[in-house]
Length: 334
Image (cartoon, rainbow, N blue to C red; front, side, top):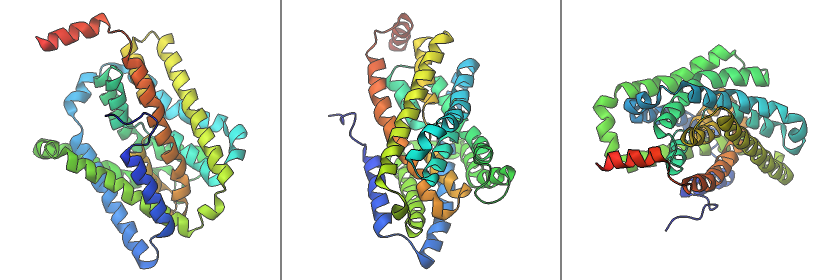
């Protein structure tokens, strides 16, 4: 029996529990130092595994559709940041300063890989193009996100320039990702046969990083400085941001003459923001004490996008089957 569309999944529930644990039992003192070192190692492992799981064949299959990919990248790295800035006069009074920094950070992040592809597949969209675009977005984000953060916030969290941030992220995230991908011929089969274990490591890594981020934030007084009206305002802000992006990507796809399959890919890849990439990046880019508040908008947006896009994917999937899809299924069956 499938889970109702508006009930959080198990991973989201685990995230909530992790935040609660960090709120009551935060890592402090010497333990916090060990947690910080472990976080760096775990983040590198996470991106090593993502690189090893990346299928080169799937990327090559979808790489030729440059107009679609360009639209997705514009939505991800241009439209989102512009919206984040444009909505500031209206929405920044609703949230705290650090939360709004988190919203701007959210707007600079790359697209998700797993959920974008899953929803595209569920809605019968262009899956090879979604794999190509989402994977490329992750790689671009390692370079583009710190530059956008520096430009939009007029600072870099570590006090250096954007190039320093890019270099730090490249060493922590990109290098393990590339090494993992280069080793894919040797370890790809091993990882594929242990997909459930790898998924557990994947999600466990994010939970650990979330615990570390919220521990530092709680010790710095996160919940004392975060009023309930600001949390409500943040929810409204995330809903408005997602709604605008979904409307604009759908309208753009139809205006540009994309077929329904490509429209689905643009809508689902162009509207997603990656928590898997975002939380490790925040850990590198921002001081430990502020990371918890800064990733709060991302965690909330993540759950909203999953619930809304699950309903949207089901609606797309109910459309009549096209002639091209029927031909493809006949060819596969033969």
